[in-house]
Image (cartoon, rainbow, N blue to C red; front, side, top):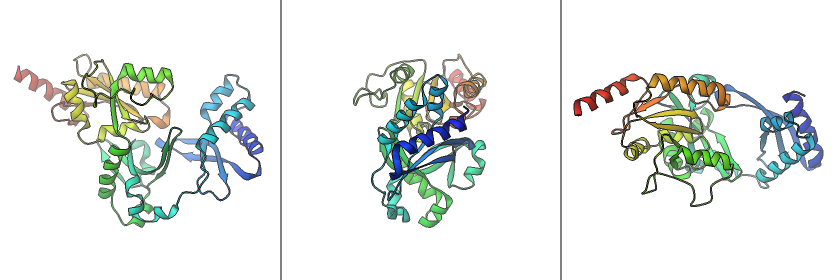
Length: 320
């Protein structure tokens, strides 16, 4: 069966298993970069929070031969881990003071999200856009969020500059930046489990800093962590650790890769590398940008073309 048929089969089976206390329905959402995703929505009578479960990963298991009933067991187990038994107090959403400490931001590709950006307050960051959302709940299973739309900004009688200032402070506090070696990142990927408290690597906080050819910048949840590249002072702190200019490779909306400038690559080489990886290894709705950025390590200033590279080389030549 194709993916649409698979979703319908899971919806029917989950509905039968949960019984009349829950309403299970098909759910379609427009995600990042305008990509449409299909899944199921599970609603509970008297509770105003309903989790949506997208099924692409489960469909891959099905295509590899896993029986549908076993997949439904896994979907139900996941639902139990994320379901809410109580309603959120929606009254707090009516005023800006009720949500002010929950506003955070993420980075998205501007060109691929033109229609979406018409409906939401946003701010330019490099050639990307920062959009705002409310972080309503956060646990090991993930985050419950609500996108801030133009209608919310009008209702709260606020503006983009205020949203940006508050989102920046909240993001640094709730989703602090972590900078770690690529070797550590690969270890996280292979283990497929969160690091135990105190065992995660963060070069911002360590006195003895490990060296690597590549590094990763993200937040502690590894979710929309590319936003950390816009946190104040972060890029300059990375420069102080590396002690040389470096490149930012936007590997996805969830993290960026940091490559120290060793003279091995230039922006043209890295642009091609980023685009190839996006085309072959990154899900469409997780692509952030198709090109790399150059960062002057002394100032933390970001360049999106060869200008910064050339100026840095001239400066070094003149200096030495």
